[in-house]
Length: 329
Ligand code: UT7
Image 1 (spheres, rainbow, N blue to C red):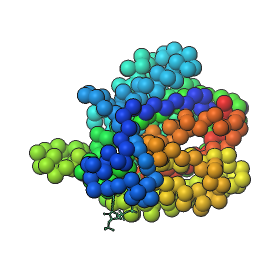
Image 2 (image 1 turned 135 degrees about the horizontal axis):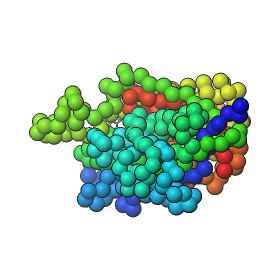
Image 3 (image 1 turned 90 degrees about the horizontal axis):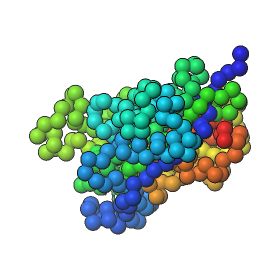
Image 4 (image 1 turned 180 degrees about the horizontal axis):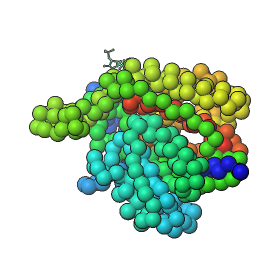
């Protein structure tokens, strides 16, 4: 029997209009363009403005773009997975809200919270649903309104994050293209270094948690940095070894965009030519679950059918992993 695979047949991205520059940030906290560019590599990031606007509004934009560009009736979509750490609400899942806003009424949906690895977790989950024969058409969205959990009084975190969304359509195929393999990992020991202190069941919202500014991202940058550099490279090396892929077989690496130094270190450890290691961190910062689909969207004109793409990410949890895709369009 021929193996059913999941092929990416469309990719879209969306970025809100407002541009928060390093110069504007330096009027808010004690920082400057030179420090941010040297230590992180970000020039500007996008911010979703507007009362009552949330992650689902970003997700809605990309999902509608996919439905329109592929002329697909919403009723054909059987599953929507939204990867996010900034859901509209703690419940219900933002995937359900996006699906409703896009008229997707014939399927099911759920969210994945795997920090900055959200998209690679979501893509792997979607591919497995398709490979099993359970569904044939899935949309995976990575969408984040990171500005809703960034403390703009904390110079150690506020330059890093931005808002945005990207999404892919995955369809069943019997061709030897699409999602080929992945390796996903997590280690909850890392939660002490990267988390949001309050708002969950351990520390529900109270006057005290708000006064202590505990509803924002808490990050100890250096341990996260060290883990990220090691684990993204390790996961990718393991995946390449398992599938007998050499550095020269890789057409492009799409790494999570958290820090230019992490991207460069990962690329050089893999021995992949720097021109093949894609980046857009300078323009958008770290959009968490949206970095990889945004990178794919912006660079898709460079990809040829059959190109080997490696996606790799590291994030809160800790979570990390890598995916091998054979570009199918
Ligand atoms: O996507 C999820 C995963 N997240 C990541 O991958 C993030 C990983 N971590 C990092 O990217 C880096 O650790 C950071 C960008 C967060 C920080 O860079 P760093 O090189 O590790 O800097 P640091 O925290 O060691 O701080 C160095 C100095 C400190 O001053 P002192 O103590 O040496 O006087 C900080 O107070 O830089 C200072 N500093 C700043 N200075 C100007 C920290 N933030 C800033 C700032 N502007 N924005």
